[in-house]
Length: 506
Image 1 (cartoon, rainbow, N blue to C red):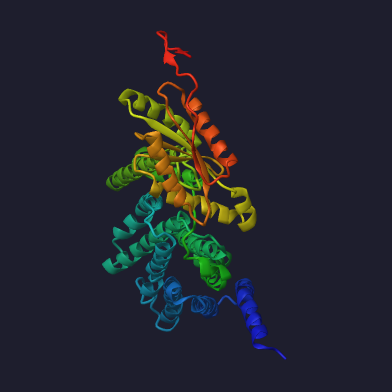
Image 2: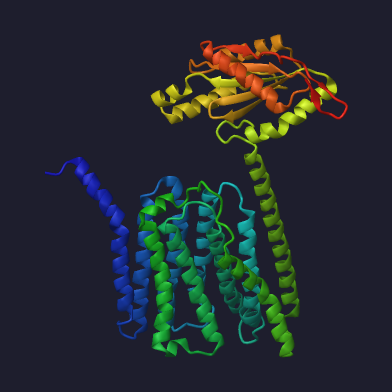
């Protein structure tokens, strides 16, 4: 007899493998599409069945997501439903009403795919990237403008100036390449986005790419004068591209990784890879290449459009270069900061201390103000680590540093010297005042812990290393005396004065 938990586990396993079952059934349907009779009704029925199956898969996949995650998938489902419905309307219009001249009532349905999918991707991006990714937007704009001028020369301009069609027909003809450019821009934007990249991410990217490839291939074949309807292999091959695009959306929605698709990633957006850089370079070269071809063939008909596109591409490239330069500067500043800052506590590290202490002593010598250096060591820190674990030890270090900085004066400097050992610079205080400050700091040590400290007053002539060595010797005397105390360093046995040549005389 099955209990509730067993049924729930089986249901979860079935849900996880649902995408595989859908993928297998759809793959079989796509292969069988090559074997159905050469009939417009058969082909349309098969395409509609595959397309509506994809819509159902997207809706089922969206239903198992959290309510806040469903909106992008609803957009995808709406776009697919409209596009697939266009097939049914087109076949009815052509075979029953005998109306197949452009534009048809099916065109608005076909065109819903582009804004709906673009909106779905935009909603995903809004959740995947809380902050606006300007670099990815520039890259997407570069592709859109580069291929846009290509579409203008070979598709949009000829359609816009065609004398054999109505204004509405020309507008519909232009709407398709514009929709493709929108889809390409959103696909590029998605690929350049941050966030998690599970299987669902790549299925969606592949689906958008398939739609774009299918539309592009259709335009190219028509411009070459190839009769697509007269070649069964080519015709069905074109259909297979769009049917595959439908199905990939369904697979993405049913895949378990769809739950994490809208989650922001911990890291930054992907780097500008060599293939992406090469693609951007190719996109920027389209306009000047087109201009050169028209000049060589003495058929300059789109000069203004090409010049405008070249200017926009130039500005986009300059903007991208400025972004890259700023990114390099930010990374350099970050590396500089990390090289001088302790990663755990946020305090200056030993390198920063060694750089700053000579300058502090030089300033004190010029002003005649006293300076005290103190070495601080947490008592029994290894025992604390062994008892409570390293995470607890890290927490103790962080909380102790925070408490000590709150107890020290604003002009004092606290740095991590290494491990559980810290060093402090107390400018403008006497030995008695330094002892008071350090004892007050000892009292605020968190988690019931204590420290041992040794401090030394600078004599005005000793080096930074000698001053630290005296403070360190005092620290060891504090430990030997029982810890949990502050001990002053012994004064230098024999004062030293500078000779005329700068050397010290004892």
